[in-house]
Length: 64
Image (cartoon, rainbow, N blue to C red; front, top):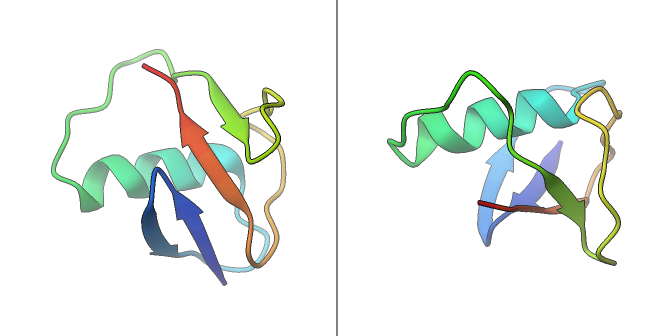
């Protein structure tokens, strides 16, 4: 499935969680991830849980 994270398109497996998207985003963009996961919002500005399940077409914004 495809989702958008900080304007970067990611391809993730079905059943992926927000934390999987965060890890893939940092890996794909060559950034180092910290031990604590950053806050993430959906396209509507709601904070999402790292264990939240994603679906096709989701948009996430990683807050620094």
